[in-house]
Length: 228
Length: 302
Image (cartoon, rainbow over all chains, first blue to last red; front, side, top):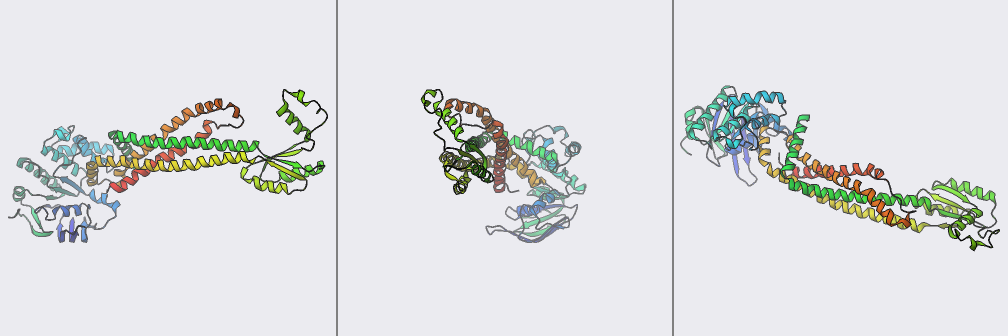
């Protein structure tokens, strides 16, 4: 599903963020990516999101070489992925419903379809009763659920989560993790970048540890490791 | 792009305009000023041009004949001159007609002064052609040609008047072009600033849109619409002003300079607007769209 082949990324200021990194994530996998700040995790995600281009190496998404695609084709690639961020990134002037519908609107989905899809995905994340609320009226967990609903409403093949539980208490974090598992069980490839040691250790999923721009460890049913 | 998406862009564009309404008003103001000046100068230049061409039709050259010329030769000359392409019209004025006209013009109401001239025509050698030209610039060529014809004694030109008017009209033209160019640049700059502010305000939203896979058109559309709306409104306001005041100002001028009645001829407002409306809208929307595109290009990395 996702394949990094000897990817190197050097920033214009000379910092080498990724150093000849190779990794492969299969369709339907649930993967944690862990590492210290400055390890290159963020760069990895940015390359995957086509926000940055690699200097060397190749990137395949869905068996398609997307290392160098025309700017115009980028939105199409991004539609294959749903993204969730630590700070939720909901639009504060829109209700939960509209925040989720927004993702469909910009992909030019018919209104009829939007009206059907949004309540469905909201009930899946347990927010169907709060669809008329604004983000500031929701708890952190609820906001993250709304963001999750927005990320998956397009039925993306990949769900990319950047520190999804970073701003949440442990109990809420678990609820979000359970949702991610549900989504994964429906066939979506889930990639979670996180610092949350307990979650990683308890889930017993594949853990890729990034250190100094390379893959330091890649263990099936792994844990967070010793260093932090 | 689907119609729905276009609708979305319009909606968002208008919301943006409302959100930073102060900048919107400032930009509309500048464009309005710019187009108002275009409108005013366009009206002036068109009217001056119109007057010049009208006056040209009234001021022609007078061609006089050598003494003792035969009527046949005069008819011949008439045919030769008439065939020249510069000539708009040619009229023969006999000596008697010239005298009648002279009397009318200078002695009207004082006919007693003419005693002694009853049987005699003091202008008996003053038969002439009144030649009117289509284009004043070709007068010199024509005069040289006619002057060389046998039987022609001399030619009287009233060129100065038209030349002065023409050079004034040219001056106004160049001045207004320069002024308009400066104003257009200022307007583009202001619109660009407005759009930049909106981009700043909507950075988060734009970012989210990018992540959800919005296309460039979708993200940029509202900003283009924003610029276009500013440009259009900025064009319509001054058009309204010009339309409203045009006839009023003309009638005031006519009243004040009633003596110049023969020379002051104005175009009806409809004749001005038939060109001014598309011109203004084109410039307004053009400035708006170019202004926002420049900004998007510079500040909105999609």
